[in-house]
Length: 593
Ligand code: PEP
Ligand code: MG
Image 1: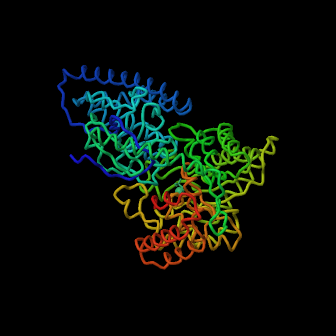
Image 2: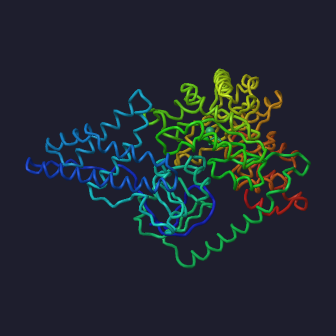
Image 3: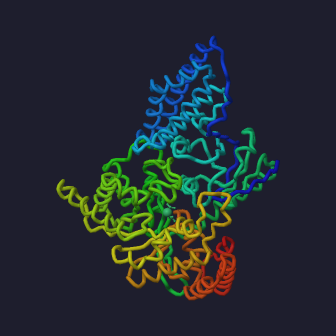
């Protein structure tokens, strides 16, 4: 087997540790015919497996409660109660009485229930599909005597590298951050939500390894280099030493960059650029606030819902939003309303959709569930009393969506006023530009909103028809494609025309060469991961806007992403060389492009 595996760098950092192989997939089950005499024994095996699964769920619940909180842990109570469902048990027993082995009987019933729930009209029922899948895996693993791959087993301080196919929300809430030091997955890309979550958790991650779970046995030791996207299997002591030295250097570079946290973000020719932080979890807020960011450019609220059975109520949301505003002490904080669906969260029936990325998600789902949406809006308006909050709507494609959201916001205001709650009514409302429709028709949307924020992760996905989470397509996910550059340029031009702030909060803003292109296209505000803030300041301080504009104009005229990249690379290298004495630590910049 090759000892070096290359994937997609998803979250920076280097880790060395034993593999923790988590195969959380429904195992294959053969048909096994039993005799009439064996029926009672098989029914006994079924009940024993159900009891063991429930005992396990109890343990998992306790762990999850400790790591993620009571609400997140409640999902496991629901799962345990499904295992007591008499209809479910009756159906499995009926198959066993028809001479099927317990594992096949359970398998058939679970397949049937999952199909049935996925097609249900009630979103409450559809939400249960993920739980049924978890139970399907858990009970079958017991019946088949498979190794217990439950993430709950990891002892603290084991320093393990989690290797799994994909990180689902229910696995995420079970993760013990004191036991896991890094993540490697078969699936995923830089912009998929595993990657975003790993960056939030501060765990180095390599994703898109395609088949690492089938290449490893679980007994190996790994070096995981999340900065380069490389895994070394069973490294030699010399290789470990080399990577340890590299890890140390990365930490030093990080420290050097952190020293830049509080310098001004202004280009060599004196143009101020706003650098904000993307915050995905309220827990991150305090640390993010020390990154030198000028506020939060994107808070993804959907992570408040990860792995839960119910939506967080108004008070819980209010506390989470207020915490972020208070951490940023008066700086602007842009909070995005729930962007649930697609690859994000299976809340509300996504498993049953043939095309979840084109489906009932984000603003569409919020507008169709006004009570859920207004709960969030009320929490936001109340939190707005504690800082400079702005509300942002995801995946907008038409003006009607903005107008409907405004109507619901006005209702939320009335409801709060009737309650005499403390809140702010005049919170600016902006939208994400993350579909070609929104970019092309941004002039029709501009009249109703206070700002635009370009979500390049989705904009690239929808413009190029390339799934952002599909590792097999990663090389086709080219943000410098002429169509994408033109849509960004159009959005910036419309923003200027209507006097709206236009920022970029997708991954593009975090990558030096892309950020240079964005500055050249006229973007004056970037939102990046908190760790990326000092690096972005370094880039900004090392370039001139007129150079960037020249390079961007040349890139816009290119026929392909590869040519545009060459153009930008040439421009940035020349700019860095010619202005080398004016900037600080320029070598670091040229290294990272
Ligand atoms: C985007 O689409 O670029 C974006 C910032 O939003 P998300 O990654 O959460 O979809
Ligand atoms: Mg998006």
